[in-house]
Length: 596
Image 1: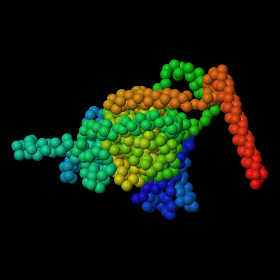
Image 2: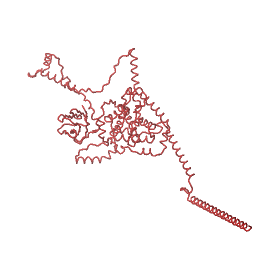
Image 3: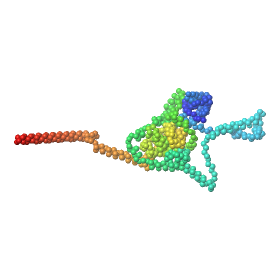
């Protein structure tokens, strides 16, 4: 059978189920509703929903088929008028099987404690004689003993059939080991099996997976960074991860991102993700202070009187985040699986801490890309999450925040302490307060990116798919808000992130170097600055400098004029001497002519 595409809406009186079933025979459509259970069938489609509220069949239900769209709209009356059915957009949770009904036995004891059921033998004669002894003396002669016995047998047969129909054979089964006394020959075998159980490492969602990478290590080398995931216990995984981070930390990269003021990191810090503009999820009114309740008693009484004056059905609440059609298609594609949760405080802390771990990595990529994920987003999220890259799931929210801070200062492009701190204390905390729909939207983005990766799609099987299912079925907005409180109460200092990296010392050295460089630059600028351009100096100094410059210019001009006059005099003298020499030469020529 195929599960059809469906969608649910509601108003104060009815629940509307829209199912897409193209090319079917309308006369073969069958649907059934009983309380929380809704069933729909038409070949080849079958749909079973576990409704969050109860619906009834009181004659107001009807179905209408749209031939052009191939959709059938079913209207179901609510048992309680005005009841709001929550989480109608979490389709995976609606597809989950309803809780198994416990078989309640009928009361078969009488007023005096005697059993009302008599077990009769197979022999007709013995059955007749014993039944005759049980007849009261004043009974009428029309009483038929055989008919009464047959009626009891039919009643017992109907009870057995009802019990067989109520049996659910889909419960999760877990093999139980048979414990036998230890013998000398088998003691070593049992000891070896016990040691193998201890050496087997558990990882994944709620530590429910093991031996997953045994046959994949040769084909998927870059899937995880852990050398031997199936034989490395959790404590050793964390030590190996911390040692790798200490070895990969680059002081020069960290100082460069801290000291270089090119405007990139400040713009990333100022960026606001899409959920910062959404209102926070309202918590239960019982959590408010008693004084606030007393102050609002007058307004509440006024509202009650107005509601009595004008009777009006409450409108269904609208969530802050409405899932899109594409996101609902992704939810319908998840394969349902039972989550065997112990619901202990340690288990809840581990689940919510793992959620914070993945969300921190996602928010970092969203912030540094300013909402536009790129081809490196999958690698960035995988690298920053110790759960996905090292199979090291944090135990507490504090462990998840510190692990993200360390890895965000070791591996990505932008390594800035203030940037990572804002992601943890503001972005992720605010996202958790919006509610599980906002968190689910972010997880669906991560799941889709990993599912389309050539190697890392396997991490969806052990982490991301389970988290998407668990968030719809078991997570609550109250616990998400409590997790946000734990994040906001953290004091993420440099020493808490790592005492071996000396982050504060590196930042102080960068600040001192920057101050010294600024001082050197100021001194060099003052030495090489030309006269008359010192705008910050005294006006008298500026005027004296201008006077000196004018005097020097005048002196230079006078010297230049004197030199020019001297050169003119020299040239005139030389010309006069040349003329005299020419005259003497003419006289000599005249004397020579006279002698001849």
